[in-house]
Image 1: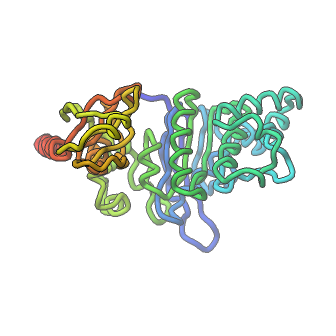
Image 2 (image 1 turned 180 degrees about the vertical axis):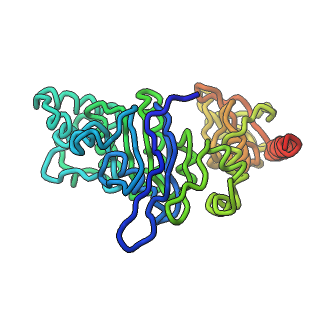
Length: 363
């Protein structure tokens, strides 16, 4: 059983003249894991997050961090002991990137030289070039600003990292990159992360556990993403997760039963010099990494190949690779990115149906 880092015990927050923002919340947040608070606007997820570092004070109940009641620590000291990342990055516009990152260590009494040294190290940790350290926030893209915000939150090496919709203001491509970066960082750092989002897809991608909040600040379900997708606790959760939750569930289902078939490959040079073919051919470079597809016939043009599938990926990735391929064949690659074969949508769907029947039989 995982060790708890943060405990909510019968926590309620009332604002004058309105219903409870958070209603009798009791839950334990695992140490070294990502816990995601998700739900519609006004459901109390951000209020719950901010009560952890006392940016919001609870009306009643107790919150403990690593066994200590948060009210036993001065609020300013408590906040400096935790990382905090918000939607707008919250960087100070008149300070350089390095000085922004160094803010909390400086408040904690670290010398300017040591704080800046730590800031330079963290630029690399969050995937930013060292040359960006001298720039100001206005000279960075939105995605770069959010990475600086994460670096600043990590600067004092806090055990707890609070993240309040940190990726919602960037475009979808950058958002996906930042989600991947957060998962990479977590593999290396193993922080206790509490992450707020309104996006169920983001919640299931990032969360080791997901807390679904309902209207009125009530906790509707708290479980691993797979369980929430497979077995919503009530109609509200089922509605919030969406009708395509079965497809999302495939992201947690192994693809062991999918057969990988041989595929005919050709290099760009061979494609230009050779005659046409009556079948789709996979175009690869000299290292056998996929470049795209050559259509049946004599057209030497290269057609983009859709998404890739790696052995060991989920059924969702397998289906996506097969359906997005112009040839109807999902390209399978090994750990080094070399072609290992192809999979067919028909066989992937058959494995999905077999898995569905097996789960129904187990109920």
